[in-house]
Every structure is written in C-alpha cells, then in structure tokens.
Length: 276
Ligand code: URA
Image (tube, rainbow, N blue to C red; front, top):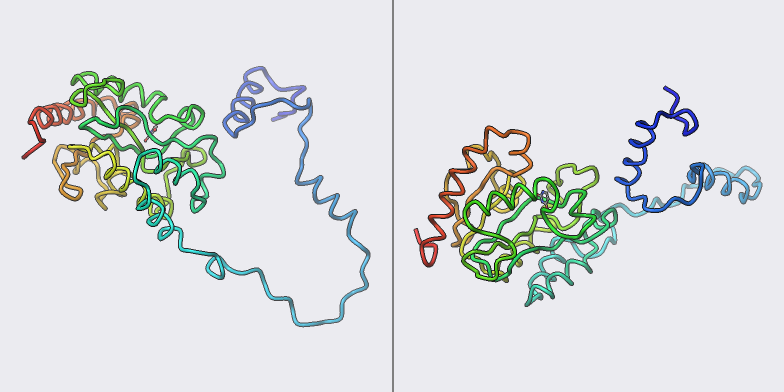
C-alpha cells in the first residue's frame, strides 16, 4: 500500500494525523516528514575523523549497568518522599518532582486526582488514558463518563461539596503508559508508596478499586470476577473491588453485577462510620 502523503486517501491521512496526535505531536512545522535518526547518523559520519586502524588493545570498560552507581533505589526514594508529604499539595509536588518512573518522560501531564478530598469514598483506578493525559484529570474519557453515571445512580458525584455525597478519584499510576498498555509490576511497585500515602492523607471511610491493576497493586490479588461483590480490607479500611468502567463498556452484560456492587456500596455508606 502506498502511504505517501500525495497518494493517501483522506481516511488514511486522517488516521495518520490521529496517530501523530496520539504520539504527542501538537504542531505542524513542515510539509514533509524528516527522518531525524537518519540525519543524526549522517551528521555523525560527516564529523568522524578518519582514523588509522587501532592496534588491538583491551576493550574500554562498558557503560555501567542499571545497578552500578544508579543512585538510590526508586522504591526507597518513593517511600521517603511520600512519607515526607503532609498535605495533598505536598504529595502532588513530591510526585511531580519524582524521576524514578520512566512513564513520566512520555506523559503530557501528571494526573493526580479529582473530586472532593473530604469525600467518604475514594475511588482508585489504574492509570490515565489519552484524554486524562491531555487534560490532567483522572477519568475524563468515555470510561470516566460511565464512572460518573454509575456513581450518580447512587447519589454520589465528584463535584458534591457534602462529604456524604462526594467522590474523590485517583489512579495507581499518575502518568499515562504508552498506547494505554498495562502498567508493569515495576511501575506499580515504584508508585505504590505514593498511593498508600494518598490514601492516608485523604483518610476515606471506604475505598473502591476499579479493576485488576488496582486490586493487584493494593490487595496483592487479581481476578476481579471473584474479588468483586465482596468486601476486603486495606489496613482497617473496607475496600470494594469493582469492574473497571472500561471493561463495562466492552462487556455491557456485566453492568448487572456492577449495579449490585453499587448497591452494596450505597448501603455501606449509609452506615454512619462505614462499620461492618
Ligand atoms: N482508566 C483509569 O483507570 N483511570 C483513568 O483515569 C482513566 C481511565
């Protein structure tokens, strides 16, 4: 298939443009693409002095591996920074300054949280998607709209000032993984101390974990089909795993179970201190 811009169909050109926007391009600076890898290689070759063949000598030491001299362990560093944060603003700043997770480099925005921090309910999802990365708020794409409708059905919203009717929302990862791939165990491990501190600072009565990644990160268990529909604990806080709204968009028949979970949640929140 010829995909040069001159012969591309309008549909293919539109798809190529969407793909570039997806990769982060936000400005048109020329009519023709420039292959900068090729350019850099050409420039390097041009600068290279013509050398006489070197006599055989012991090879130079190779670049240090990931462990050698690579500074503090990122999980230790995350724990230290998270523990030092005494407010949500300090926690946000600590995450923004943290360089121990490679996802930060590819993300447009840090996605910290949304909603009312005084809410009795804290909802924890997986990681930002494309819209969340663009806007800098969690759950603002299609799955987010469904999430808002689900909680509205039991009288809760992220904009409610009353803690009994409010939601506070965050994710396990604050930066978007490329192409929305699943977070790796290493990425989860390194960001987990920040999530645990986030929970301590918000101090919710009840937590909802959306989907397998959130359950894996905070309960150490996967298998949302079996985990949902039952109360679990994180420290002494009640935790309800639920199907992720993105899963519900792909599997609308699972909305019946999600509704049952919402009713469980509602009746728990109707108890004054979310007791058993
Ligand atoms: N899915 C998530 O888990 N979190 C978001 O913020 C958006 C989609």
